[in-house]
Length: 144
Image (cartoon, rainbow, N blue to C red; front, side):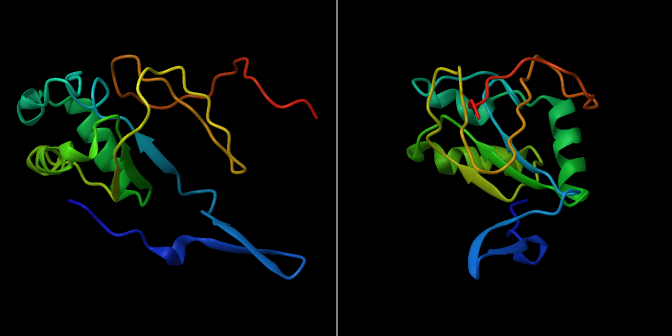
């Protein structure tokens, strides 16, 4: 089920009389979730005929739909290209995933380094959706 984002959840911010980009309240997370190898079989773009029959990861379905029902924003962010949108939307629907948006064309190859003026938290998927825990690790930051 695809849902529209509710702009009422956004907090409007002003600085020196000028509007800034709004932010979500702290209790709502904005999940960006990969598809291939994260919620289903890992299928490369070069084999699109396999996309409609990919095996779903049941723990991903349960966890993501729980987050959706709790009011979090679910966006699938995939390296699949625009020509794969219809088959991807059909697969998500047939497999019961609730989400708000689908972004195509994520760069391939991993080793992502996301730079943003908003808080970014990254979680590497290692094979199973489980309860999130707090863990300290080293990160790269800009020198102040």
